[in-house]
Length: 126
Figure 1 (cartoon, rainbow, N blue to C red):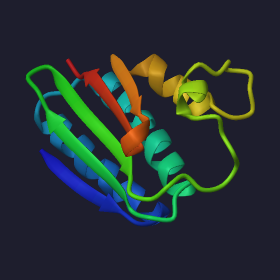
Figure 2 (figure 1 turned 90 degrees about the horizontal axis):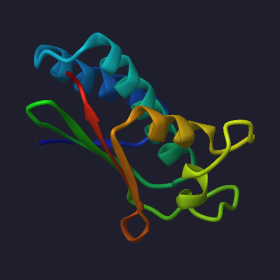
Figure 3 (figure 1 turned 60 degrees about the horizontal axis):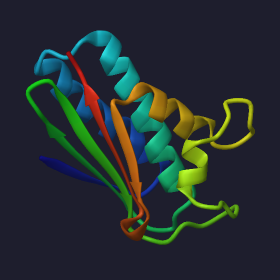
């Protein structure tokens, strides 16, 4: 299991590169790597945009996939949302929430743990 702390938008690219490199070495399907990359950009970008604290990216590889956790260490900031649960159910034509809609569509399992400000996904990579 690997934990990376991100403090600003500039930390996203190297963090994603590290995760994707490890997944590629493990033999992940290139198409699934692209899906994972998009999901990570969406989750990390949202977390950093809407939080004043660090964002913890935790990644653990399994035999056939990966589990990822993106957790905000500070409360949500910015535009008022009625919680991520509503975003996960957003219609694709809405102005906001499309990123989480895509993450849900691309991942095999996605959940939001409100008490810990944690988005968790599981994705098969084979």
